[in-house]
Structure formats: C-alpha cells, structure tokens
Image (tube, rainbow, N blue to C red; front, side, top):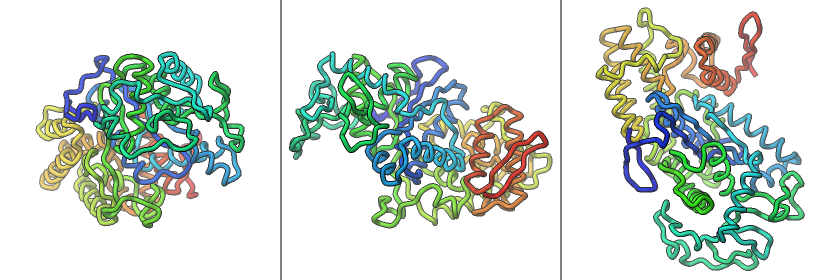
Length: 463
C-alpha cells in the first residue's frame, strides 16, 4: 500500500509503526452549527481510508475529535440563550444523523476537547519547562514559534515567508506575530462554563493544543496517520507539530494526509455567494448513497466540484449499478462480507491495486462498472456477488436492488425501501456489524424515518 505523505510531498510505501495495527487521527468538527458539504468531503475521504485499511487486514484505531469549546461556539450559544453543553450536544446529534445518512462510519474514539483539559495543561507545562511557551502581557500562554527548529516543514514555508508583511498587533501581547495561544486567559464577558482553573490562570485552551493532547492521549506520542482538510495544513497542523514535537523532543506523525478543497459550481463555497449548503440541505433533494457515490468518483486529493449536475450524474450511474444487480437469481441482498472477497480474481486484483495506490477510488469505481457490464451480459450470480462485495468496501450497493430502484434513489423513501433498509439493518446486527446497523438507523433518521425496536420486531414512523 502506498499513500501520499504531505510532509515529504511524495507517495510512499505505508508501513505502520506497529505491524498489523494502524493508529490514525483526523481533525473533526468545531461543533457550533450543522455540518456542511465541505465537512462531508473531509469525513468521506477518511472514511474511505478507514474502510480500506480494515479491508486490507489491519486493526485500526481511528480517532476523530470534536472541538466543543471555541469562540464561535461561545458566540452561538450566547446568541441562542443556551449553555455551551446544550448547543454542542444538539449539534453532535445532528452531525451523527447527517453523516450517518452518507454511510460515514463512526471512528473508534470521538473525544470532546473539554474532556481532555488536564492533558492540555500537562503539554503546556512541558512546553513552558523547555522554554517554548511564555505568558504574554494579556495573560495568555503563547507558543514561541521561532524557538522551535523546523517550523514550516509541513507547509513548506520559511519563517521569513510567513512573517513577510506582518506587524505585531497593538496590545496582543505576542513577542512575534507568528506566536499562537496555547491557553487563553478568561474574559469577564465569557460564560462560566468555558472558564477552567489552571497553573496559568483561569481560562480555556487554544485550538491547536486540543488536537495535540487528544491524539497523544488516545494514540500515544508517536502514531501513523494524521489527516484533515487541506485548509488545516497551515497553521493548524503546522502548529500541532511544533507544540507536540517541542514537548516530546521526537518525531510525532509518520504520514500526513490532506483532502483537496471543495468548490460549488467551480466557486469557493460561501454564504455571501449564496452557494453554501449543509449536508441536510442536500439530503432534501438527493439520497445519502448518491451523495456518497458522487464523492467516491473524485480522488480524495483532487479539488472537488460540487454541483447538481454532478449529483444527477452520480444518481444515474448508481442506478445503473443497482439495475445490473436487480433480478439476478439467488443473489444475497444482505450486507456483503468483505472478508469473503477473493483478491486473486482479476477484477478484485484491479480494485485492490487502485485502492493500494493512494486510495484511488475513481479507478476502483471503474472496476465496479466493468463488473456491472459483465453481470448485464451473463446474469451470473458469482459476478454480481463480487460486485456487491467490492462496492461494500466503499460503502455503496448494500441496499436490496429492488428497494433502491423503487424508492431509495429519490429524495424520500417508500414503504418497500424502508422495509429493505430494516432488513439490511437486521442482517447487519445478526452479523454483529453494529457500526453498519447504526449507520442504517442514522441514514433513515436523516430521511425522516424513525425506527423503534421492540420484542416483536422493528417498527417505524415518519418524523
């Protein structure tokens, strides 16, 4: 398996630190509002990585954090007249519902920043002891960027390039404009639930220190993959490296991965341009599997252009795949077992070669269409089974074909499609694939169908 390492700017052979076990951290959501399609793009990219690593036989510990303390969160909670916890609990539930509809699996761990403040304080203390952190005149604890040798190695920018044109802002308390806050002193107008006691005074953590503390706490001070959107490469990921390696004195992450930017109709997504869409907005017109399939057809590192035309094309393409499977005699329509794939078969070998080449999903999807063409010609059950197995690795083609074609491809689900999803969930639970069972439940909930499990079986109501 080979992947592109943003740190070295090269495609490298992947070798985890611990044979057979991959430890991966991905920067998740700052949870003050509904997730938008840019968030979906990022989480989809690393959902594919997560799935393929497991399909390749690795045990994977996947951590995707939640930032639940931030200026935007404080502002939004204040505007709504609710507590920080009320806002973040509401938005986390909405996130799970929306990304569940896209088939994005939950990570192994989903830590909230507020649960790891002691670990953040420990890191800041270590940085202070090493002379890399200082208290500013405003009471903040700042990181001294110029004291860390190698700052800029991820973004490829020198300190002089980064400093060009900058000036120290009046009263910001920094020794250098590039320095960043590790601990922010409390302000009188801030609510009490964002004020923490610390050796550095009452306050709250800076954004960058949160990810360093959570990743080290759950994965150790050295691990395999750190991922996120390209927009986080600088300054967030650069600052994470500086503070973590500064505290530990040794290399931190082996491979850095970044997904490409998302545009809407070839323009940057922006509320001011009127082209800003939440996942929930899109799910009003397109089913979650169509949105997922649309994203799979673009390589994770490539720029992604989101458009109605692209979604329509993806829906038509997905329908062609389901149509190929429809009516194949004796085809098992339960959740496909990826462990049963024979990787020596020609199509499976081509699929594997594509995925092993930096997770090249567009080529892998082309293999699915080749198999669908063969199924259309032969109606062979073994070929159709292989198609569903390989597609299952990517998280698609797992509905009963007839259920999808009669309702799943539309913006709403009819009773046949709902029954098919309930049966798929039942099969997933029987196979002890509880993550998939949860995904199906969340997907239905996102489309307004609420499941209720009883001793007599599963019933549903429309919300």
